[in-house]
Figure (cartoon, helix red, strand yellow):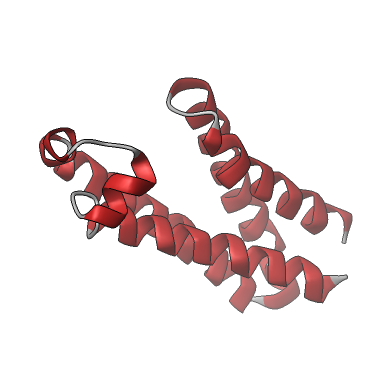
Length: 118
C-alpha cells in the first residue's frame, strides 16, 4: 500500500507542477487559454495574478515532494500539504469552477485517505 500511496502523491505533485507551468508560463498562450477557457484579453489582464497562483501551486508540489523525500518521517508534511490542496480545491470548486473539484480536490482527498490509512 505505501507504494500506491506514494505514487498517488507523486501524481498529485506532478499535477501541481503542471498547474505551475500553465499559470506562470502558458497563461496567455493557446494551451493556457484552452485549459482555463479564457479570452486573450482576459488572460493578458490577469497574467500577473495567474503567475502568483502558479507559484503557490509550485510550493504545494514542493511540499509533497519534501514529504515524500522523508519517507515514513514525512507523513505529517504529506498530510499538511494534501489538506492545503484539498481545501484550495474545495474553495476553487465553490467559487471558480466545479471542474476543480475533480482535478484537484478529489485527488487530494484520495491521497489524504491513503496516507491516513497507512
